[in-house]
Image 1 (cartoon, helix red, strand yellow):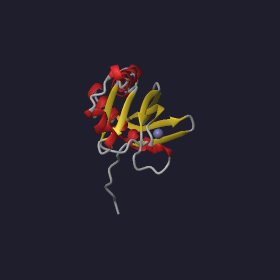
Image 2: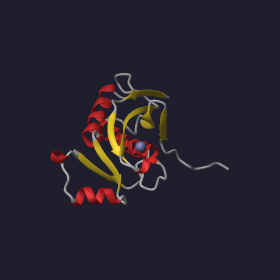
Image 3: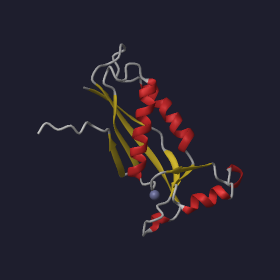
Image 4: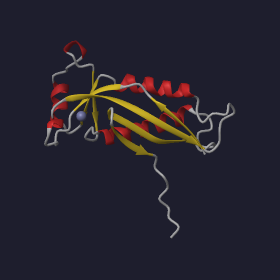
Length: 159
Ligand SMILES: [Zn+2]
């Protein structure tokens, strides 16, 4: 088994956790740093798990979609207010991303693991044949706090 790991650039996101009893219910921001680990059972013809330039390409897609965005749960009334008011970049809102979950770092890591899986499945030749898998998505919300999402592994049991 082979693995490569890449630390991506920081992604600046504003969010809030509307049901949180503390300060997290208020709109605030973090600079998230994703760290992705990809594994493969077989290397490609270049002797690589995946070419590191693909991480840069994935990073660009992530930045395009999420950087300086406000990410809010679809059930968060603040998101509806921002949409109704048609806030846009001229009023200081670059992009609003509504998500189907409270935007905790755990949920973001899980979503970004899935997005990385779709990306590498699309971009990597021999993805299945070489057993390529996005194994781990660590997302640092602060310098010393991160959430980790790991790839789904078959639940079949032999007992
Ligand atoms: Zn936060």
